[in-house]
Amino acid sequence: MGFLHHTHAVLQRELTRLRQQPMYLMLMFVLPLASFCFFAILFHKGVARDIPIAVLDEDHTSLSRKVAQMIEDTPTAWVAYGIQSMDEGERLMREGRISAIVQIPACFEKNILSNTQTHLEAYVSGANITVNGLLSKDIQTAVTMFGAGIQIQLLTKQGLTERQAMAQLQPVRFDKHVLFNPYINYGYYLSPSFMPMMLLIFTVMVTVFSIGTELKNGTAREWLRTADDSIGAALLGKTLPVTATMFLLALVMFVIIFKIVGVPLNGSLTLILVGTLLFIVSYQSISVMIVSVMANLRLSLSLGGGYSVLAFTFSGLTFPIMAMYPAMRAVSKLFPFTYYTDLFVDQMLRGAPAIYSLPDLGCMALFIVLPLLCLPRLRRICTEEKFWGRS
Image (cartoon, rainbow, N blue to C red):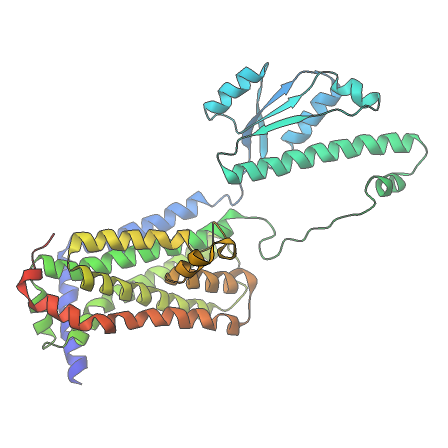
């Protein structure tokens, strides 16, 4: 009962501090909610459409116009410019106004009608890998369909039925089935990545700030005395408001992800909620360790921010973990975000059985042990004045 009483006393003190310092309002409410809304609007469209390209038509025939129209009819490409030379196209690309140039050579129609192979050139900017992939795929698909249509017409004129012509043109048919995100919707892929990323950043920042300001303002001993010198009660009472607030923000985040962005939920919401709570507490635990070791608000905020941002790099969302060097795969295990991402994707899109997500929950729970290892150090920096007043 004494421990709970001391925890409650620290909790009351912390709630008073929250009301008195506007920075808490920014870090715990305004900025997280603003970031969630920003990403919801950013990825609301879901799929990249109408990326501007230029077409250099050196043939000016019905077939050249037809292939240009088929390229524009693809979901990704938008023929924004009809250029007169490659120099003009290069200038537009360097200015960032287009992402690809399609060159239709002279004698394009003549070569096709004379059954002579012809070439169609596409120059796609590789500066943006996503745009490069989308445009390359759609332009190649349009040109392949155009060529197939020409071949089918030639074969049907030779007496074959359309079905026979198709079988001769494509003796082996390839069917691709995209699992879990068949629409290739970037909102389904990036919203559940960036929003938890923002949640962890603000969790780290506000936890570091709440403990670090006690040291900076020289009130750490008062904080500890409120808990009757129980460092465990002092830490629990201080972190509980952050835990509760961030979990409520996570619920708002889920409403945005599942209801506004429209991401499907194919698995267990209960597992996601449990994982989210562990995710928040694990990053609070890391924040406590950082402040305990650094004993400096400015350095702790810098280190916590750097550690938080690195989590996305090593999560496997942009570059697969399985393709990393073994040393980098080991480093990826040092971030709770890696395990939370696995759990979130498994339960959100894949609808995986619960047993496959239990190891991720266990790994996140291990990070909660960190504050226990740092309690003696935290007590020391709270009681010795030489650690106070550092910015």
